[in-house]
Image (cartoon, rainbow, N blue to C red; front, side, top):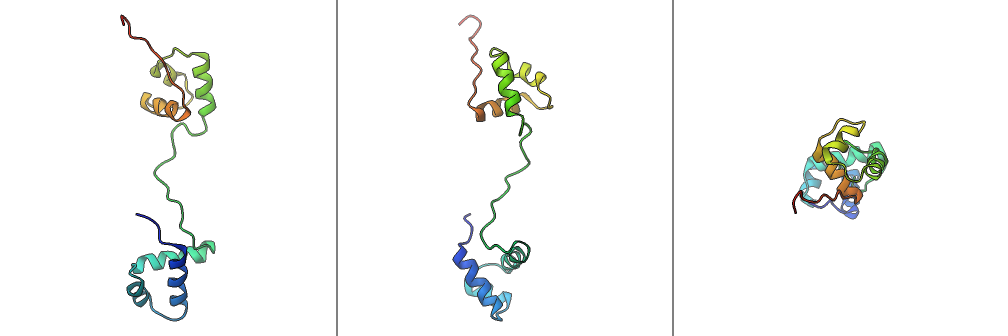
Length: 115
Protein backbone atom coordinates (compact mmCIF):
# COMPACT_ATOMS: atom_id res chain seq x y z
CA UNK A 1 0.00 0.00 0.00
CA UNK A 2 1.35 3.39 -0.98
CA UNK A 3 1.50 6.31 1.41
CA UNK A 4 -0.93 9.18 1.00
CA UNK A 5 0.44 12.14 -0.96
CA UNK A 6 1.78 15.24 0.74
CA UNK A 7 -0.93 17.28 -1.01
CA UNK A 8 -3.69 15.15 0.54
CA UNK A 9 -2.05 15.38 3.95
CA UNK A 10 -1.95 19.18 3.72
CA UNK A 11 -5.60 19.42 2.59
CA UNK A 12 -6.79 17.09 5.37
CA UNK A 13 -5.02 19.09 8.05
CA UNK A 14 -6.13 22.40 6.55
CA UNK A 15 -9.78 21.30 6.76
CA UNK A 16 -9.30 19.99 10.28
CA UNK A 17 -7.54 23.19 11.37
CA UNK A 18 -10.37 25.23 9.84
CA UNK A 19 -12.80 23.61 12.26
CA UNK A 20 -14.04 20.44 10.57
CA UNK A 21 -14.26 17.41 12.86
CA UNK A 22 -12.09 14.35 12.33
CA UNK A 23 -15.14 12.33 11.26
CA UNK A 24 -16.24 14.95 8.71
CA UNK A 25 -12.73 15.26 7.35
CA UNK A 26 -12.29 11.50 7.18
CA UNK A 27 -15.53 11.10 5.22
CA UNK A 28 -14.68 13.95 2.86
CA UNK A 29 -11.26 12.57 1.94
CA UNK A 30 -12.11 8.88 2.38
CA UNK A 31 -9.45 8.24 4.99
CA UNK A 32 -9.72 6.84 8.49
CA UNK A 33 -10.08 8.96 11.59
CA UNK A 34 -7.15 7.03 13.06
CA UNK A 35 -4.94 8.13 10.17
CA UNK A 36 -5.91 11.76 10.78
CA UNK A 37 -5.06 11.34 14.47
CA UNK A 38 -1.64 9.87 13.57
CA UNK A 39 -1.02 12.63 11.03
CA UNK A 40 -1.84 15.31 13.60
CA UNK A 41 0.45 13.66 16.13
CA UNK A 42 3.26 13.41 13.56
CA UNK A 43 2.89 17.13 12.78
CA UNK A 44 3.02 17.98 16.49
CA UNK A 45 6.02 15.77 17.23
CA UNK A 46 8.15 16.37 14.13
CA UNK A 47 6.65 19.35 12.33
CA UNK A 48 6.82 17.28 9.15
CA UNK A 49 3.94 15.88 7.12
CA UNK A 50 5.89 13.71 4.71
CA UNK A 51 5.29 9.96 4.92
CA UNK A 52 7.66 8.18 7.25
CA UNK A 53 9.76 5.37 5.96
CA UNK A 54 8.60 2.11 7.41
CA UNK A 55 10.74 -0.09 9.55
CA UNK A 56 10.67 -3.59 8.13
CA UNK A 57 11.53 -5.67 11.16
CA UNK A 58 14.39 -6.07 13.57
CA UNK A 59 17.91 -4.92 12.68
CA UNK A 60 20.12 -7.43 10.92
CA UNK A 61 22.14 -9.66 13.21
CA UNK A 62 25.38 -8.86 11.39
CA UNK A 63 24.74 -5.14 10.90
CA UNK A 64 28.01 -3.31 11.46
CA UNK A 65 30.06 -6.49 11.13
CA UNK A 66 30.36 -6.50 7.33
CA UNK A 67 34.09 -5.70 7.45
CA UNK A 68 34.70 -8.54 9.89
CA UNK A 69 32.91 -11.00 7.62
CA UNK A 70 34.70 -9.71 4.52
CA UNK A 71 38.06 -10.10 6.26
CA UNK A 72 37.21 -13.66 7.34
CA UNK A 73 36.34 -14.58 3.76
CA UNK A 74 39.55 -12.96 2.51
CA UNK A 75 41.61 -14.93 5.03
CA UNK A 76 39.82 -18.22 4.40
CA UNK A 77 38.16 -18.16 0.99
CA UNK A 78 37.54 -21.91 1.13
CA UNK A 79 35.83 -21.84 4.55
CA UNK A 80 32.34 -23.26 4.85
CA UNK A 81 29.43 -21.23 6.15
CA UNK A 82 29.64 -23.13 9.43
CA UNK A 83 33.35 -22.37 9.79
CA UNK A 84 32.72 -18.67 9.12
CA UNK A 85 29.85 -18.68 11.60
CA UNK A 86 32.10 -20.11 14.31
CA UNK A 87 34.80 -17.50 13.66
CA UNK A 88 32.43 -14.53 13.93
CA UNK A 89 32.16 -12.59 17.18
CA UNK A 90 28.35 -12.64 16.87
CA UNK A 91 26.21 -15.69 17.58
CA UNK A 92 24.26 -16.24 14.38
CA UNK A 93 23.07 -19.10 12.21
CA UNK A 94 24.75 -20.29 9.03
CA UNK A 95 21.79 -18.96 7.04
CA UNK A 96 22.41 -15.48 8.49
CA UNK A 97 26.03 -15.69 7.36
CA UNK A 98 24.90 -16.80 3.89
CA UNK A 99 22.45 -13.87 3.61
CA UNK A 100 25.12 -11.39 4.71
CA UNK A 101 27.56 -12.80 2.16
CA UNK A 102 24.92 -12.51 -0.54
CA UNK A 103 24.23 -8.84 0.38
CA UNK A 104 27.97 -8.13 0.26
CA UNK A 105 28.32 -9.86 -3.11
CA UNK A 106 30.74 -12.43 -1.71
CA UNK A 107 30.55 -16.05 -2.76
CA UNK A 108 32.02 -19.24 -1.41
CA UNK A 109 32.92 -21.53 -4.27
CA UNK A 110 33.08 -25.18 -3.43
CA UNK A 111 33.70 -28.01 -5.83
CA UNK A 112 31.82 -31.26 -5.36
CA UNK A 113 33.96 -34.06 -3.95
CA UNK A 114 34.03 -36.32 -6.99
CA UNK A 115 32.64 -33.94 -9.53
